[in-house]
Length: 199
Image 1 (cartoon, rainbow, N blue to C red):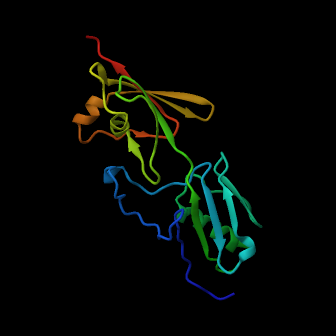
Image 2: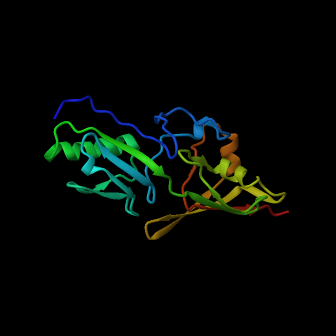
Image 3: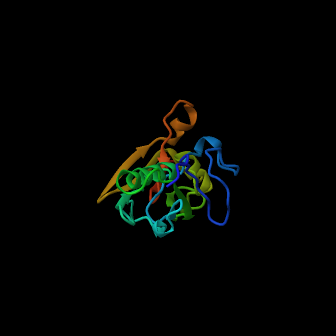
């Protein structure tokens, strides 16, 4: 097998654009954008250069794994496409191939929804845009902002972690005033509930 310089690339659904870490160009603030991490139900295509029989198209399992020829179950969830390709490349190179070149392509993104309830203008379920993250303040804004009796200092976020439900009590008013406040990122399936003021 010839020796090539390893490369990692990603092609998005319906496009042939090379992945970069440049900020998104839509209305979401640049600081909310970050490298996309593979998640359960993403559909990806794994190719090994000049090894067509090793190509695999599959959906990432709930535990973040994907089954590949020869090397079996591989953990890809929680990794960027570059990290996933690197991990797969190392596994193939360890016992089966000489200097393999691996590319990972995202064919379909999993739906990543969160819910905002309580004292907001438009309660409901919303989708986190592909390759982006949103924080608590942005989540409330997406839901139309607070009602007249909405209380920014009284927000509860419910989050499923494994078999447990974690509860976070947050003060969005303080976060908005303090530029150095730690950003609270909203994750898929989070339920945000905005409390009300006592008038």
